[in-house]
Image (cartoon, rainbow, N blue to C red; front, side, top):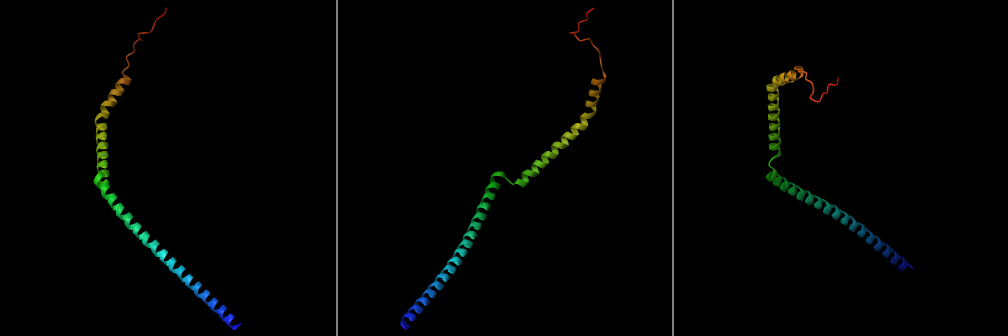
Length: 118
């Protein structure tokens, strides 16, 4: 009976050691998965930064700098507004005279299609 109980004890101890090794292996696996995930994330970030840098470089080569374009558009808009304002001030007086003359100078005439019936 003692040998049976010793055998059972040895089996229980072996089972416990196997369970401990299994838990330790699971922990190592979890740590390794976490480490692999961090390494993959770092590699992805590095790749993304590299591709964004290449994209910006190509975009600058193809389109030029956008700051330069917006400054040029702003300058053209200001110039157009300045031209329209000066044109308005130059022509306002003469246009007002023409409008007033057209409105105030009435010359009554009989329409050619008017039939005078007696």
